[in-house]
Length: 434
Ligand SMILES: NC(=O)c1ccc[n+]([C@@H]2O[C@H](COP(=O)([O-])OP(=O)(O)OC[C@H]3O[C@@H](n4cnc5c(N)ncnc54)[C@H](O)[C@@H]3O)[C@@H](O)[C@H]2O)c1
Image 1 (tube, helix red, strand yellow):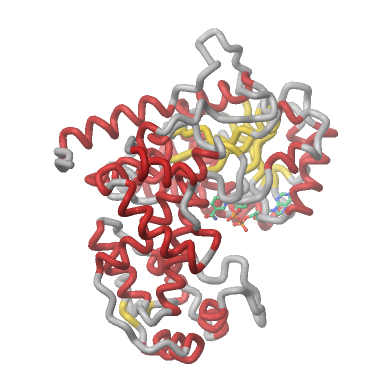
Image 2 (cartoon, protein in one colour; image 1 turned 120 degrees about the horizontal axis):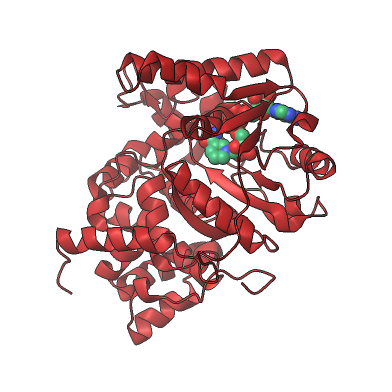
């Protein structure tokens, strides 16, 4: 196959971006719900950033926290973000005040009753979300859209806590939510058409790139990310060091590899002192207070800057835990081991109708995860590699771990020809058959 030119790749990316806005069955005639006031629950990392999208777009936000201190802290972070932009000359000081004036901080969910849309952004804990959606169900006006920003919880289960599942949807923002362009709009089994249409429109209003996805663990973006992370961890257990894995993915074009990303996100997400998780290397690093960039040490050392420096401490921990001898693996092999499973997982997502079309997967990874634009997205890239080579690698990885068995459609493409970018899902599948 002749390699596509950069013009062809740029054209594909532009067409994919347009296509992502198309939702079969929704038209200009589909009714929309009016969104004048947005409620946000939680003023933490995500709640604050999510709110900023609306206040920046001129939409009022009523934001709820558990205590006055938490509310003040959250709004202080928002103000300092706006102030930093004003100090850099992005907008005048008046604009900082105008945007802050659109916030109305409260301490009770009942105060959100007349909001048109509520976005829940509290801790990732199903019991807490149950409590919140039960209350929203009780207090919110009829017709209000009830959204959750959960990263991985089952939105059908959340919708099931209400007697208005047609009004429940996932709005999965990425961190920092005021900066990242991607918004996964998660259509649950019973989400109504006008709720989807309203949220797609709203995404445009707040200047996001929206992709409609279905409910599955991690949705589209994180589900594919998990596949890469698992393989990156397996490589470490085989004796490849984290910086060797990252260097290979950096060479592929990612600004950050899996371990650089983990250090940025914080290694202590989902970890508490003394915890023994299924990732003992991470546990050991956290016990040493190597929690990532925020503690100037994680997989890497950080000295005074954010430049990651390979760490002898981390290497020692890895050698102790894995017992693996150092191996020198060619970068091509590391890249194939990390990237082909992402493609395989994407194909499974399409088979399960959790994405509308292959190019939507590319839009997610280009805009939310730093996929190198010169490679057009995972599905586009897969076509340049060809199914047989990807299948051969997945046969090998799948033999070691059934979670990585080749997707049926991957086998089919390898046997019959055909392109990854042409896989037809027939649209998202929901209980309504939409
Ligand atoms: N951090 C990320 O990168 C990221 C990305 C996408 C989605 N998410 C999801 O967003 C949600 C929030 O994550 P976060 O990182 O902002 O967490 P966070 O810990 O920074 O903030 C959560 C906030 O919720 C508040 N809160 C807890 N219970 C509450 C209640 N009953 N009423 C009002 N406020 C309450 C807490 O006081 C806290 O300020 C989670 O579901 C998470 O999975 C996080």
